[in-house]
Length: 173
Image 1: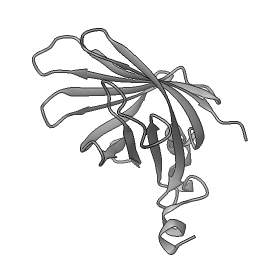
Image 2 (image 1 turned 90 degrees about the vertical axis):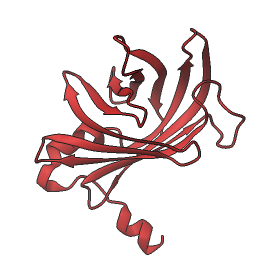
Image 3 (image 1 turned 180 degrees about the vertical axis):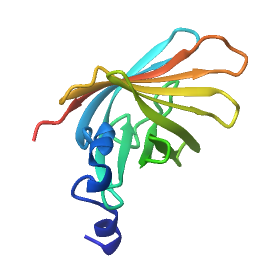
Image 4 (image 1 turned 180 degrees about the horizontal axis):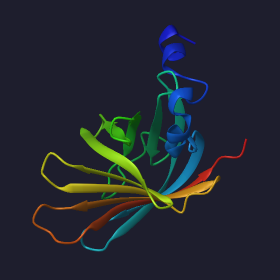
């Protein structure tokens, strides 16, 4: 392992905020996913994908890689496009929330959000460069599965619109 990889990765959560870090830390591991993209006209397209979560930065953050569809480099996934990106989720105790940055350089998509627990779910909210509101939610969370929902709300709209939903199952060792 290179020094960079060794210094980036961590074996577990930092003890200082270990309980708060488990909000996303419970996802650490490898996941298979079924992704459904929802078009504004009601069309739907589904494809398999994979997601990998790990501890980074002395266990103060959780980073993931989302690859949709699988394998990477497959033909373009209708509506949502192919994803090969990473999210860095850093807990900020000064606001009791997570600062979240998504980077997908292949599609030139970059998002900033704040994430917080909302009942049994996790809700992340932000704004796109075009002024649309974004809401990404982890729901139906168990030790072996979760449902992720991606929604947008244009600045002039009153209702949220589903863009993508992901049903993930933890890979068996």
